[in-house]
Amino acid sequence: QLQLVESGGGLVQAGGSLTLSCAASGSIFGILSIKTMGWYRQAPGKQRELVASITNGGNTNYSDSVKGRFTIARGNAKNTVSLQMNSLKPEDTAVYYCNVLSLPAGESWGQGTLVTVSS
Image (cartoon, rainbow, N blue to C red; front, side):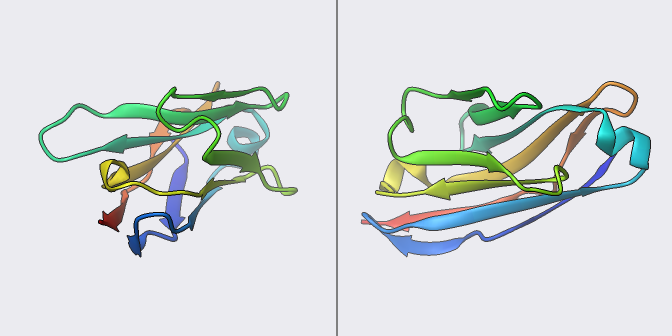
């Protein structure tokens, strides 16, 4: 597994913006073999759900609830991924987890970062 460190969570008012960042570290081969990077979230009492993902080729996938508001992007170093969140709503409140799939290293998860959107 790779080690993932997330940052950028916090408290924001509805309509505001936040950017989450995630950096992967570990084996060089594992990092160079990353297939997809993504963000999941889990709200209290709910199941963890996919928010957005991006493949090594740059293909993106978003949940319907965040399309048009969130943007996922890979960093130039390819071991980082960010999630730009705009027009935040109270229902976006959740713990956000970075997820990385690397063929040799398997699936890795970050420790989670809390995003709270106040109404």
